[in-house]
Length: 191
Image (cartoon, rainbow, N blue to C red; front, side):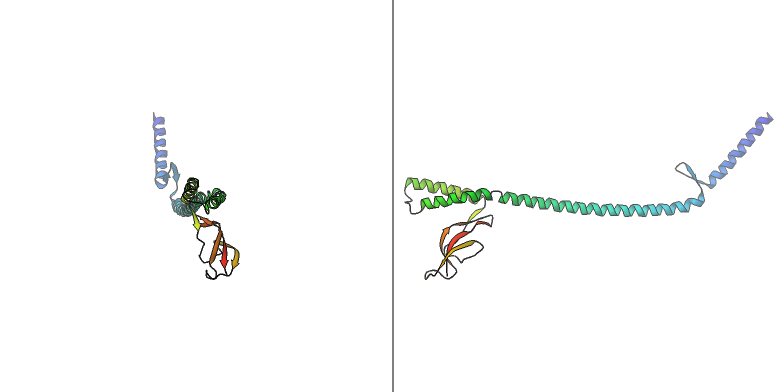
C-alpha cells in the first residue's frame, strides 16, 4: 500500500505543477499561449484589422463606382431605346411622303365638291393625321424667311411682291419628324 500512496503523491505533485504552469499561461482557442507573446498578438490583430478595413474601403469604393457605372449605363440605354422608338418610323414615313405628294398633285385644281375628290381628300387627311400622331409636321415655307437648315433653294429670282431672302414658291413640301428634318422644302427664293 505504501507503493500506491507513493504513486498517488507523485501524481498529485505533477498535477499541481501542471496547474501552476497553466495559471501562468493563457488558453486561447484551446491552445496554451504564453503571456510574453500576448502583446505581439495584439499588435498583429491591430495590423490585421487595419488591413481588413483598408480592403473593405477599397471594395466599397469599387462597388460604388461599379454601381454608378451601371446606373449611367441603364440611363444611356433607356435614352437610346426612347430615341430608337422615336425615329424607328422615319424610314417608313420617308417612303410615304411621295404618296402624300401624289395626293396633293391629284387634288390640285380639282373641284372639292366632286365625290371622287372628296374621297381622295378624306384618304389624304386620314393618312396625314396618322403620320402627325407619329410626330410628322410640315415645314412652313411660302412667304417665310429662307432658312437653309429646313429649306432647299432650287431657284432664285428677283421679285417685287416678296422681300429679299423670302420664299416665293414651294415646289415640294418639307417635313420634320419629331423636330428632325427628314426632307427639306424645295423652294424658289427672292433675291
